[in-house]
Image (tube, rainbow, N blue to C red; front, top):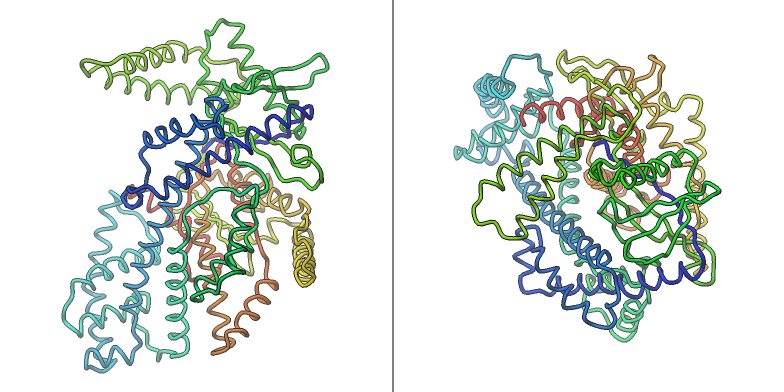
Length: 640
């Protein structure tokens, strides 16, 4: 994607900030809380959970009924629209998460049912291990040509494939055939091959390692089942009333079981939100940009009257806000000869950020504006690419719409707007010229994450099946590697300070420096645009895309691995396991993978390199994981 997000601080008079805070905290946020509550109690909730979405018209109907009430009235149309979009997004994400957890549980339970030790396989098949191995050899001989043939059919032509890609295809074939097999010996042979990664192992199985791997899978299932029982979204409790209710219940009653006690504890220990929900401005013309005689930039928002906010931002972002102003003025002075669909600005979000100052909340908290922009709109060549995409899309939409008979007024107005956009879209805004980035489709950069080695990069030529370069986090940072160690020491110190504060029942919120964010930017720059050919980076090797792992998979893998290590280290002692897991987490790098991913995405969007997301392999070294991530992403792209 070519979309990046920048932010700035908005500064205004105290009365202006007070009006906006009261509108967002006392009107909009309670409205969102009420919408979340009513959706969760609706009779059709279970149906929506299966479908994965809420009917849009339902949310509009709920808002229309609620805005007649005094406590929700007095908001602009943009605030009501933002509330609908936010609730829809929250529940859509929650539905998708629940559905994914169910699929994961089903898959892991199916694998766990199939996973048996060599001794169990001998007992089930009533044959010796040598007989099972002989049958497994026959299966490998039978199915290997089939897997290669299927792979070549998907590719459309013969290409060199790595051994691991062949094994991946063979593994899927064996897994599918296992469920269709009824003969005990054949099933056990399939299970033996799948357990040993499609190989015939000549070594005796290590019972301890098998037990540990099986227990790791059981832990993953237990964690997923606990997460499946998670509560539905409840919004933000700015007044603290819900927390007080939970405290009253917990002090006046005795928990009937451990689950209820944990729920009370989680509700009481959960950090409550101190700021209201943000307000989204999805329309590009909902914000008006201004400049005073001193050259200072200001912004106004539709629905807030003449409330004006001054922009305070980083120097490197001033050019973007100036471009927003220039685009708007060019369109206004040309009497709408230009289309707003070609604005560099795509959308905005108005949000409060918790501050440390005490006193009035609208002065103690910081008001921020987050703007999403399309980096392709920065140049003439990029803008032309966008124009071609939009012309194709609008033309197709108009062709389909005009084929319909008996269009109503709303549909006719839509066609008129689309035709007007099509007439003006070929008149682009004046932009500087810069050639678009052209990558080689066969070159991909895989970025793997891990516990002890946070980041590892592999540049892979997927057609030649050749790894061009590997780089660790130390090599990427170079002389700045000491900053990583300094950040690690800072995290350990803050962790110790929080621990002491908890013992003294004192506030545990300690501000952290922006050192971690700076390190992320250095890594992103090294991966994307470092000019030295001695380092693995996307731009030097003209990579077509960068492949990064799914963050949600990483969290589950890390948590399960740590708990499995703890159970092996301290078998049978739960308290000792918890202590070991805690100490182990402190001893390794604690990394904000999400922040690093966003930094890489932002830098890649500026250059024009695309980003792909894949599933990181569980087994292998960090280098192998990074290389496999790139190869698997290419295979999925070809299959699609």
